[in-house]
Length: 525
Figure 1: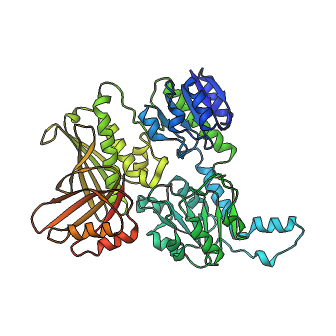
Figure 2: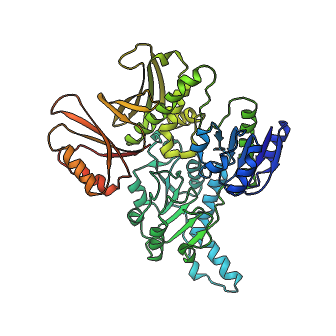
Figure 3: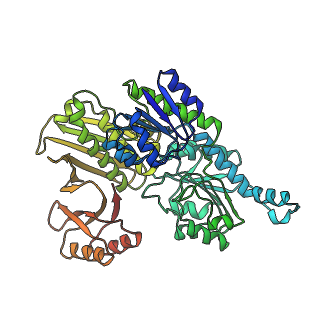
């Protein structure tokens, strides 16, 4: 079997492939046309971040069984197109954790002591001290956005500098934060109290431009910002204004919204330190991620289960065809409930009723947990590691079966329990193979589970639905479908809307002010 390894994969990964008896061709970056020509000759492909694996590049690759990403993010791979073609996509979520954490600390020290700027002056023959007066890390508050693997490693290292640690992470239980000696707080509080703010979140629809003009304005005058996560989380235009106007004292950026980038207004600012996405660029990290993904490629080509599947749960035998549509349903129920919940999830429960009860539930549970955790953790969570990630985050996971058959031949029920709220959803798959939401907190519904959605609990009375629809129309948001569920006339009810576009925060506030509306939450599946 043949493997194509692009983007200068570390020799350690190539060695593992060759020792497994695979024929390996190692090359540099390829563009789409070149990749399209050669890919039909290979059974496996491994890339780093330079080569883009598009749907067009995969179009004729009938032999291709697996694509490995030597790193965490898979944004350079069209995962949906690979899934449609039955191509497994794997990544290496563990290998670069220490490298990214250490790079964060390196940038923090450089930012605090103006090291790159002072280096530049002295090499130009200028001995300057007053201009580069720095600050100490001791007793400063480090705000950490995202307390996953990398955020936790940053916290452990920052404690050595006697910093006060404060984090925003809606999925982390207080017990885990306490073990790290990190305080948990809402996003706005972290922004307001941080002297240094470091970002360790994935880029998702919820985190895109998470730090915009308003959020940067909430930060302390003189605070400093670091991003070694993903470009796009920070609005770069708003950041430029905050830095140029003197509100923020400095920023250190390893990632950018468009990469590669060699020119930006931010590059002209003396209080900005930039590196070209070097977070994972250590010899040790490159060896680790290359080895991790190479081992999964070998497992796949030998017909063994892989460890880091991004897109396809491993289900074999006669149950595969039966479970496949319900795997998607379970994942979407997880994503739906996870976005409804505010605050950490303490317990997640999955129950199946009907014919499905005769099968092993673990693939469905893994799919459910991946959907639940994905909005916050992005590519760091997959079908294989989702149960482990949930356990590390203090989430108790339960599974139940019932052969009793009610109105539906097969029904999947999901429950999330938090500290302040609980959500229960039920779903099934219709005759067209589409996941459907048929129950929510005791309300009967029949709604799709895809695209842009609004959840609107309200009082069941006249002049509720109309004003909601008018407000949406006034802001140019088209309603594609609406389902309303109630238990009794005049009591509490719920609206689930499918809409054609994202709902801005200001529109959500308008909807919440409508008399009789109890809450409004926007979701995207």
